[in-house]
Every structure is written in C-alpha cells, then in structure tokens.
Image (cartoon, rainbow, N blue to C red):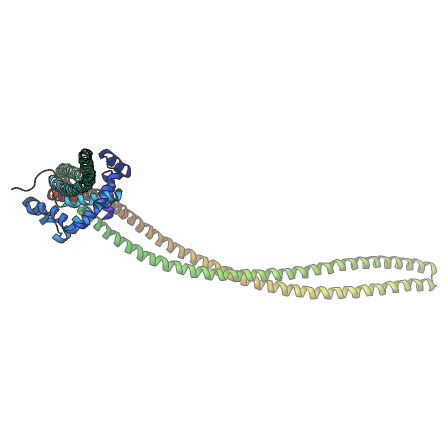
Length: 528
C-alpha cells in the first residue's frame, strides 16, 4: 500500500521541491507549522466532539451517506480514520511523507466514487469546525485579557481614592480609566490577531491537503479519460480485426478448396506409386534370388580358386626342388668338367712321355746300331725306358682313378638327373592340375558373369521402375510441398485468426472493465 502511495505521489509530481513551492505559494511557513502543532492539544481534548462534528453532516445527507454505504469500513473504523487525519494535521511534521499520506486519502475517496465537490464540502466543514474552535479560544483569550485589565483598573482606582487631593484624584482616575481601556483594546486585538493567525494556519494547512487530494482526483480522472479514449481506439481495433478476420476466413476457405483438389491429385499419384512399388518389389525379389545363385557360384569359384592356389603352391615347391636338384647336377657336372680337364692334363703328360719314349727308343736303336753287341748303351736306354714306363704306369693309375671318379660322378649325375626328371614330372602333373583348376575357375566365372548379367538386367528393370517411382514420388512430393505450403498458409491464417480472436476478447474485456469503472468525477452520480 505504501509503495502504491509513493508511486502515485511520483505520478502527480509531488517532489520535495514541489511541496516547498506549494507551501511558499500559500504562505505556509514555520510559524504556521507551530500554530497547527499547537492545535494538537485541542484535538486531544475534544477528539470525540470534533470527529462527531465532522461525520455528522456526511451521515445526515443521503448522497454522502450513499458513499459511506459503499465503503467496507465500519463507523468505528471511520471515526478512527478521521482521528488519524486530525492528529497528522496537527502533528507538526509536513514533509513529503505527510503529503504522500494525503494521496492515499484521495485515492480512497475516489475508489468510493465520492465526487470531488463532496470532498470539498467536507473540507469546508472541517475548516468550519477548526474556525469555531479558534473563535471560542479567541473569545476566551479576549475575555481573559479584559478581566485582567479590569482587575488592574480596580486596583488603580483604589489607589486613587486614598489620595488627599480630590482634583488630582479625579485626574488620575480618568487617566487610569483611559489607560485601562487602551490595554483592554490591545488585549482584545492581540487575541483576535492570534486567533486569526491560527485560522490562517489552519486554512493554509487544509488547503495544501486539498491541493494534493485534488491532484489525486484529477490524475484518476485523466486516467479514466485516457481509458475512455483507449476504449474507443479498442473498439476501432476490434472493428478492424473483425474485417481482417473475415478476409482471412475467405482466404482460408479458398486455400481449403485448393488443398482438397491437391489431395485428390495426390491420392491418384500415390495409387500409381503403389503399383510401381509393387512391380519394384517383384523385381527386387528376382534380384534377390539371382543374387543368391551368384553368391553360391561365387563361393564355388572361391573354393576352386583356393584349391588352384594350393596346387600352384605345391608346383612352386616342386619347382624349387627341381631348382635345388638342378643345382646339385650342375655342381656334379662342374666336378666332372674339372676331372676331364685333369685327364686332359694327364693325357698331355702321357703324350710327352710317349714322345720321350719314342725318342729314347730311337736313341736306343741308334745306340744299338752303333754298339752292335755292346749292351751297356742299351742298359742305359733300358733304364730310361723303364723309368718312363714306371712314370707312365703311375700316370695310368692316376688316370684309372680319375676314370673311376668320373664314373662315380657320372652315376651320381645320372641319379640326380633322374630325380630331377621325377620332380619335373611331378611339377608337370601339378601344373596340369593347376591348369584344370583354372579352367574350372574360368567356367565358374563364366557362370558368375551370366548371373551378373541377369543381375544387371534385373537392375536395369529396377532402375526403370525406380525412375518411374521417383517421377511419381517427385510429383507427389511437389504436391505435398504445395499442400504443406497451403497448410502453412492456413496455419498462419489460423494463428492470425487466433491472435485476432484473443485481441478481440482482450479489447472486449478491457472495454467491459472500463465501462464498469467509468464514472464522472466532477458530476453528481446520485439523484435526489
């Protein structure tokens, strides 16, 4: 509640500087504050009488009584509110918090739909109550001052009668009477001035209160005027929204008709698509069957290829053995070649020996011819021949050994070659088996190719069907997109309709609320 009062004070511009300006404008100063605060004792002493005097005119008139009947406050609560106002009015503190409280008073009476001139009359009655109290207080002060002057005059006359000189006494009595009259007049004037100053302070204080309350009423009235203008604008917006809603409804009907046509076309297209899909399904089944056969053939080809690979590996091993045997034969032949070379060398030696033997024999013949019967020369020759013969025998033995070795090597070579032939024969068999396996692979591959051709043909058929399906689907998709666009348009239109309906409902609700709350602040709402 306090926050609302502060907000209202801000809205009507009730700042510290504004309050000071208001005080200065009506002449409300610290002296007035002290005089209002001095009336607090009067409020405390005559609280019930003052509250009764304030509420009695309100409760005695039918119009103001009707306002009170709209208030949820009881009579006791109303009296407490009035007491609170009188106490704050004479509380001596007149800052922004004080005047913010006055906005709450104005807001309360505005909510009770009390016309402003009613409230002005209530303040007039309040001023009359305070002025009556001030008048009575002024009278009391004046009478007290007169009584004091009268007592002073009586004392002066008594003093004058004691005087022996009668003339002087009369003169002094007359002078004392004149002085007493002037004092009485001054005392009454002071009492009246003091009472008038109190009345002025009261009027200025209640005037400041009335200013703030007037601003509160005017602020509320301005809000209601703005509300009425907003209601008029809302009515115009509602009319525009209704027109737009009608146009959108027509557009929605048109869009709906177009969607129905597109839906029919799409249904036919989808039926055609279903037929194509059925054909495509049969083609796919045929492809699946052929693929199974191709798979089986491929597996057989794989097994055949595996066997061929194993046979080829065996052939490779046999060939490696042939290579090894051939290497051994080569080594044996190389040894045989070396032995033959050695035989050639020995043969050369034998040839040389033979030559020398021939030469010796010739010499022996010559010596024999010369010597005739002399045997010495022959003995020498014979020895030489014998020596050569022995050497030839040794060489012959060597040759015999070499021949034996050659024979042995030859036999080994023959055996090696025989082994090589067997290995080659085995390799030939393996190669033949490999060739046979390769031929079977070739046949298997031909079968696989035939299956592949069937798959290709089926794939072509499938591709053709797929193209037809794709064409049909493209058409259906285009229609679907068109339908989607139409649906989006309808959705947008529907959303817009919904928004318009919500706007219309909100405007109607605001209009109804404004119509219920609208009232004339300065007018009289109650008939006699």
